[in-house]
Amino acid sequence: MATSRSRQDFLVSIRPQYVDKILAGEKTVELRRRFPESVSVGAVAYIYSTSPVQAVVGCAKIREVQRLTVAEIWKEHGDAACISRRDFYDYFSGTKFGFAIILGAVKAMPEQMTARELESQFGIVPPQSYRYVTDRFISLFDDEPFQATHRYSRSHRAGRPKAGRSAAR
Image 1 (spheres, rainbow, N blue to C red):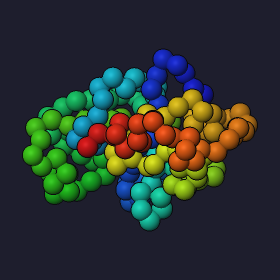
Image 2: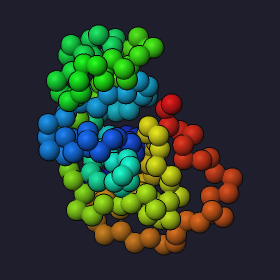
Image 3: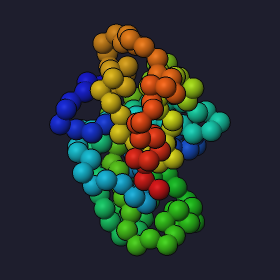
Image 4: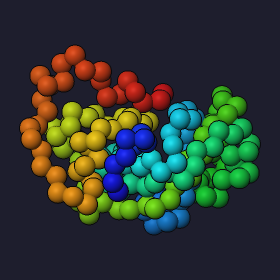
């Protein structure tokens, strides 16, 4: 999936049981308590499968981001989110609004990138929720060959914001 300067692609952390359903085409809506409404249609969500997988395993284009009441999200997207009613309401407990991220063009990565590789090659610590990614990161997953010019180390990241700070909490 090619990069575009007019969109903000991001890395999103998702539990493995939901990742499997996204990659199988069963789950077409990702749910979030907080999410930037500025994410544009066509942006790419790189999917990081959390523990025990701990790797970027796929990506999906964003078809739409909807900010709705929790009740509206359940009514309109509960089935497509592949979540039980109880888990849904537990997740959204204490909030009136949430986000339904409509996914399209889902693609499994031919080779997964582990959390260790994310940190060593890009200085990225997998986010709790999401974080924006750079063109350099995106180029790794383009159809074009990628060559790392150097590896990030802790000294390369000095003075840079930590990866988790851009993630919604």
